[in-house]
Amino acid sequence: MANQNNSAKEAIKTYLDNRAATDPQFAAAYAKPHKSIDECFNYILSEAKKRGSSVCMTDDEVFSLAVHYYDEDAIKAPKAPSGYKATTSKAAPDVQLTDEEKAQAREAAKKAYELQCMKEYAEKATQRKKKEAEKLAEQKRQLQEEYPSLF
Image (cartoon, rainbow, N blue to C red):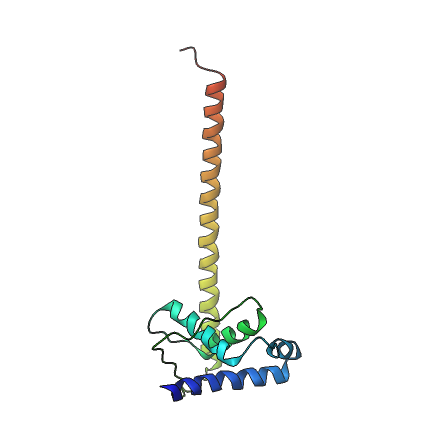
């Protein structure tokens, strides 16, 4: 188990070292004396644990959390959760898409985004109408209090 955790930690460290070598702004954050790869790894594990007891994360998700840990000074990594197991996966091959598949994926993403936007717009319109109805009801109530009916 420790060997697998070290393998994952080494993969993260290698990524961060390469990023620091090519990104001067990140290199400054990576050199912060109060940050360490062990705490970074613990932070990633704690974030993964928030997602559940058995979590799979992409490399990009893990590396993004690692960069976030170094970028943010306020992050304090907890101690490593007990009984954890972190592994790296080399089994998944890189996926090569054809131009047609890329175009289809792009179109599907556009449609999904349009649907999301339409849903958000409809929700906002519903909320706006609800607020307007509440405002009108309050104005009517105030008028009735101010001018009671004679009938």
